[in-house]
Length: 317
Image 1 (tube, rainbow, N blue to C red):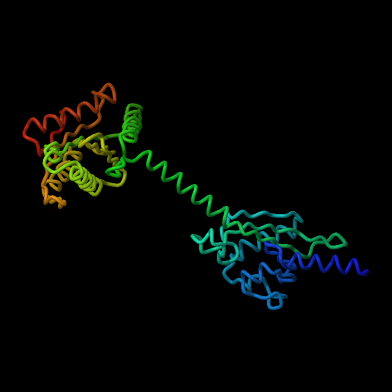
Image 2: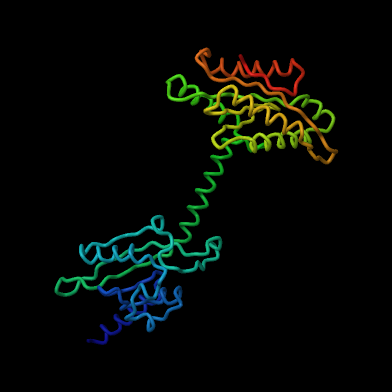
């Protein structure tokens, strides 16, 4: 071998040791033949210690069945395989070390498994190339979280954390359309309005009024079942869509909520406050020719509860 060849070989090995990707060569028994500096640094295992050791002995936490099937496929088919971090986030148990990705304790990795052809055309060795993609993964996760938050905010009332009016309108529309197509029912709608809420704002101020709205929202949410749709309809008025619930079930629910609110003591910076709430219920039926008619019937029942003296539940007949 000439001096130039020796120099080029030295350069090649130096590059392999210091390149910022993991390089591992294994034989068909999964024993390590080459282990570069990236793997040493992140595993804490020297190339001397790793050599001739089974990859699965070096990393007992590896999913052996899954990875071995990948390795065997590459050996048999002589075709590279690419594994994205989105399929397997942390193939090798390496810690993240980049300051920008400190919110992630583990390194996210992409993995490429390539066959190494011998001079006679056979394949007895594989090269595993490990890429640190933690920055990409964390940034994508952060973007996805932000998008989920924005989506949630677009559906949620900012003050009470209940569903907002737009979300409520969509849910009511879908429920009504499903009912008239004969695919669901019974369903009931409960409209609720805080009694004399204007006096709360006038006597205590709007900040206290907001606190009262939040406390009522908590009671409504806490008293509802999974699948019930609780929303703020506007101002001090709330709306609860009770799926698979008839008029009597809606009345029982409304009375439970009404009594809880009547018994609640709302502690504020300006003293304790007691409030009551009026409720109107309407079961969806064929007599309502439109969604607006159904909503109107629940609203009329609510109005009747207020006319009758407030702090009570009225069911639409």
